[in-house]
Length: 443
Image 1 (tube, rainbow, N blue to C red):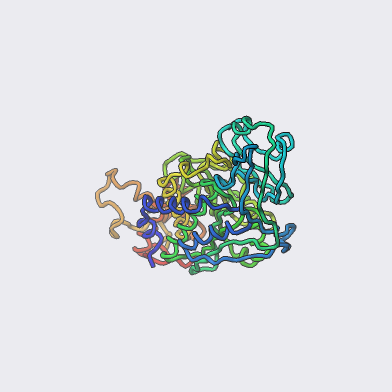
Image 2: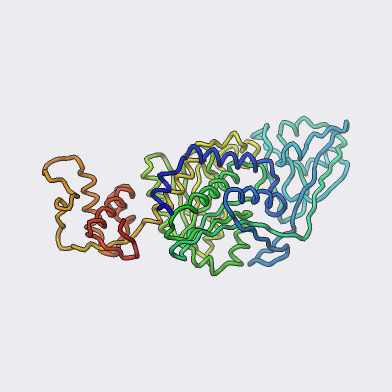
């Protein structure tokens, strides 16, 4: 197998981005929710990229303070005007139906229908995404401009759905490493036709798994493709031992838009993954933002709950709720771009490479500086400026390598790119000036 550096060097972000976008295009029309055949169909597409295992948990199963809900599937849904024309049609766009709507077939005047209709007055031309998972109701979502144009009716309303005992379905892939310590990558699969807030994260995670499958791995990697909230709660309830092995993790979402990268730290705030992501984003030399943990959002809040307190952060581009297209029909295939998806995959791989190569070493000649020139590591003519940064990296690594500090510690202390510090350490290892404290091998 290739090492991570070679895997990263071999990544063609343009081709990867095109492949992720093709996955999103195939998955976009599927009506997904927290349960149902849409989830299974989406996992089948993921299985075409990597060999995930698919698991099901029966409706009614107790998972901590929650219960797996009935399974929801939809055959059709519509609103017909007095002429018989479908003015709102689930088959035209699955966002038109309130998620988890119970069955109904009725004739109603607009006044009686109006409480069941959802729109966005501030964005009158898009369909909002709305759900009612845990309270029985039915409803339709439509552009506000369309709502304003509706007459008094009467309207024939039909939701041909099934809510019945079934299963919650999720996908999982484990890539074993030299250590049982695990890096978790999680993506939610429960949204219908939303490209950025759903499919971008699923696609990037699946392609990351495919790329890592061909690499030599220090850590074990666990990829979860789960329904939001209830999926992570259910997985944690059934996998406490596996959760205890999680060293670090990332939740993947909103990775296809053109915004700058944004990272939300773990609950701990200064964990290795928090520092690794910050270093990767800073080393990239592009605008980025980092915020502290907030117990609201995606599944990171379950992984960071105090009973588990796992070091799991959220790495995205524009965060959820901060772009106009969020949770609307504007979050479509035109909103996500292949080039953004490919670069997002590259950033994730860079974080993985940093975690994999963040080692601790001990200087084998700690009494004053060893002579680097006779080992071909230092300039033989003094006073020149060329090569100064490379030599300074060597000296920083030698000075700080007392067995207690990692390469990430050194990069942060020196204000240097992690790759430069790691390259210096590799050179010093090859010259037999460092010894590993945690099983690292010479290149």
